[in-house]
Image (cartoon, rainbow over all chains, first blue to last red; front, side):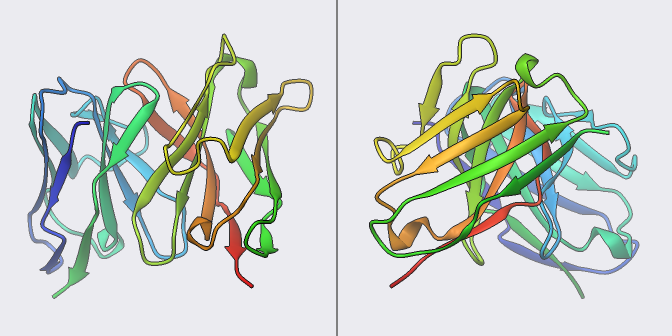
Length: 108
Length: 119
């Protein structure tokens, strides 16, 4: 099975900061990776699919990059509403998917 | 607007059964593969089961294989998850999600229904 390593597990940042979250796959997964945002008590929300495609309605300060084994989610200028938990999702083995362990983004 | 609305959660004793439902609207149900995912309190996301849009083929996580059954009723635009032989570790919020091809990502997610397995 392909393993996913998401880091960091938590990060503290301030409004206006640039933040990067990474996911690393143990094998080449091409661009079969998605990113989700989850706020407390809410369902996850799709941000990025196919590693770098921005979901409709998601602000352009969110971006995804990478292919193969190394992927990043970048928030270019943090807003108050961005403080949440972020998950990556490996998607190359339909229908079995693996989620990263999550990154909690907290206000500094 | 695409909407997924889960129901059927509740408190059940270990070894018991429960059937979850997910009412779907806003898209052609039969044209999409559907998935159940779950999240235990304070924990991450876990894939549970998927049913394929065309063939009706099903797949399950090892942790639920042989105990859970995913199914659909296209006449009612409803997805189901029959859960038998429930264990304490099955306690979680269960989300119904649409699986989109070809990149196999999930959108949207239902708000979820809470299943608590406890004596």
